[in-house]
Image (cartoon, rainbow, N blue to C red; front, side, top):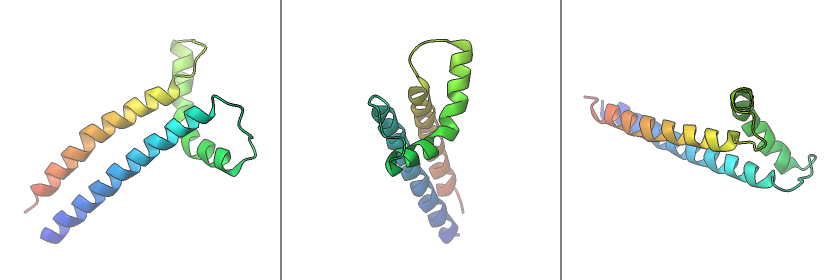
Length: 100
């Protein structure tokens, strides 16, 4: 059973890193949006393709309920990701440590 415990701990570690990297990708996209990036740049296309599936629904609901001129969807997404990270990582680690 110790192999399963170690496997779950490793998966939790990878999940923690993935969420952290995704948060930085969202931050970089938000910073790049302040200037006029070339839409044909592969980096800009990658950032847009990776972040838009989660930013679009948040942007839709924010504009529907709070019509403001500033796009707050990256900040809301980062807060949601931090909430998921702070809740799920310790919970999964505790679950892994309780495995027999």
